[in-house]
Amino acid sequence: MSNRAVLYARVSSDDSSKDGRNLTGQLEMCRDYAQGQGWQVVAELSEDERGVSGARWDAPELNRALEMAQGGEFDTLVVREMDRFARKLAKQLVIEEQFKRAGVGVVYVLEEYADSPEGRLSKHIRATIAEYEREKIKERTVRARRRVVSQGNIMLHGGKAPYGYRLVKENGRSTLVICEDEARIVRLIFEWYTVEGLTIYAIIRRLSDMKIPSPADRGNFPHAHKKRGIGEWSRGGVANILNKETYAGTWHYGKQNSNTGERNPKEHHIAVTVPAIISRETWDIAQARKVQNKANAKRNTQYEYMVRGMLRCGQCGATVGIRASPLKSGVLLYYRCEASFGTKRYCHKCSMRDFRADRVDAVVWQWLRDLLKDPETIRAKAEAYRAQRAEATRPLRDSLAVIDHLLAERQQELKRAVDAYLKGGLLGKVLQEQAKQLEAAINSLESDRAELVQQIEADTLTDEQIYTLEHLAGLIGEGLGLADANFTERRYIVETLRFKGKLLLIDGQKYIDASCYLGEDVLNVSTVTKNYGPRGYCLAAGM
Image (cartoon, rainbow, N blue to C red; front, side, top):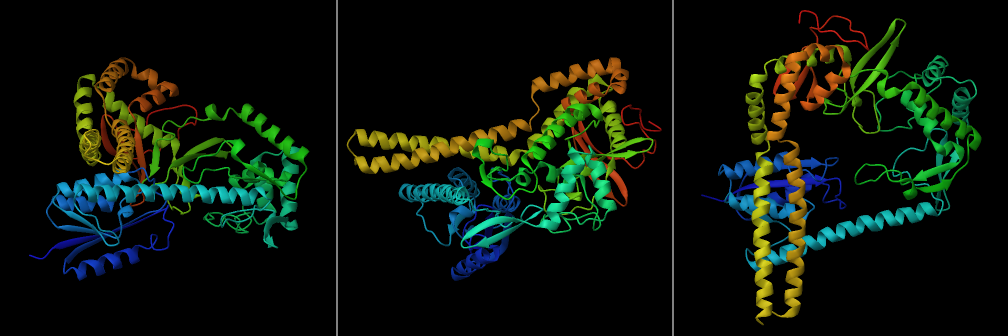
């Protein structure tokens, strides 16, 4: 029987070469190699992990290849080069070991390593150097960019200039120049906010009534999908203008970490002087008013969203935010997919509809209430959840077991190398190089072991947590009425049960795919028709 091969290709956000970013090219190269060896290609798998955390261990197509290997469906995995698996040495070692245990060999089109101590050492050296070089390239790139910006150049990395400006490149320099028709609108917004004292929503209405083209209309947010019509402004559009110090003459570079997405500390920013659209005094007044408004509004306690921060969109996977819609008779609260109205975080547009927060909260609370009614069944429910999560995290646990095995192996190899040196059987330079590579592998494995343990523990229900749930159920059984009437109590219970939900739209009906420590269910939100008050709470009709 001929050798059966599976081809695997992967691209990620940190691929710097054109070849690395081309899935089709990777697969063609692997296909040519396999056919040249006379092998039968039984599957071609590829995944695009651009925008996906490099820390994750559950790459779907790679897991699929591993399941096929464990099922005896092929003999050799063909990959263009070693770092197509992962960018870290530890993950490369773990993945190779998992395929080896399944009886599948791994071959690299551009590289060849013998299955021997020397071959493993060569592979470690190659991976360590590649990992080091990638980090150095990133570091040099960031340093070069910061040097260019510190010389007064504006660098937008393909983005658009702020509303009110245009990016002009002249004599090797990039600068911002004022676009007067837009700058006039910026001045109006600051004047309405600081002099007339208009709220952001009042400014939105005034701009929209005047049919003034918004930043999105002018293409200032190229990755945002505009939901409103021409000349209709959003809260984000106005707030973004009021937040930009650029308009006072200071543009900042390096506010966000490109690797983690988190904001850098202010001392890391590079300030560049640009033409000012408003005075520094006007800017300071606007910032002072924002602080005062936030203090007066008490935004964190103004409205009650019971499952805020616990929902995701079942259609596109984006996080779910909140919004309040003011009416003459009060306020309606909604949960909404953040990708449905275009944010900087998401470049896609989702068509998921908004969900009334009062109805979602009512359905979820009734479901959790029913789960807690009988304290005697809590342990059984919690144990069932623990078993279910244990199965879900099995691939992570398998990886952890492989890491422990590899750690023991590498530590033993290091000990043997040191013993050989002490006995005079190994030259000092050879030992130094071998020890260096083994220590690099051990450090990388230990780092990723800690990462995996953290992921597994976050998704595991402990005995202590089960006891807490039993105790909570006992208290709830005696006084559910207290939680019904008290938002703080309900929110505490929801958090303790680790509630998670997905918004679903099925045949025009709205559902919540709900899960917690005590079970899972799909809850129909559309059956709730009663109008609940935004601050009070009552159970759904018919419950």
